[in-house]
Amino acid sequence: MSIEKVAKEFSDALKSGDYAKAESYWADDVVSIEAREGDMKEVRGREAVHGKGEWWTANHEVHSFNATGPYINGDQFALFFTMDVTQKASGQRIKMDEVALYTVRGDKISEERFFY
Image (cartoon, rainbow, N blue to C red; front, side, top):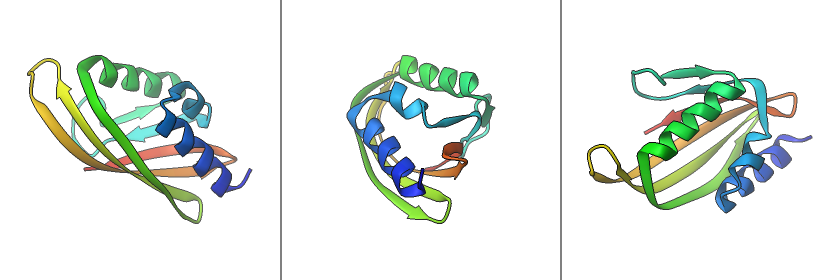
C-alpha cells in the first residue's frame, strides 16, 4: 500500500470519527510520543497507545475537532489538528493547535509524534 493511500485512509477515518478504523493502520509495535514530560511521554505498543487514547477521551470533553491534511514527505505524513476541549478535572476550556507527524513502515504507522 502506498504512503498516499495509508495517509488518506487513516486521515479520512480520523476526520469521520472512526477511531477503530484509524487504529487498524497502526503497527503492533507503534510508538506514540508527546511533546511534554509525564507518564504518557512515550507509549509503546498497540494496546498501550489505544489506552492512551481512551484516557484522553475520558478526561476531556471535546466540543470540536478538525483535522487538515495529510501532508506527505517520503515515508512520513503530517496532520494539523484544531481542538476545542474542556479538561474534566479542572473544568478549564482550552483551544489547541497540534501537528501530528506519522511515520509509515510496511504499510502501517510505526510512530506518531505530536507537536504543540
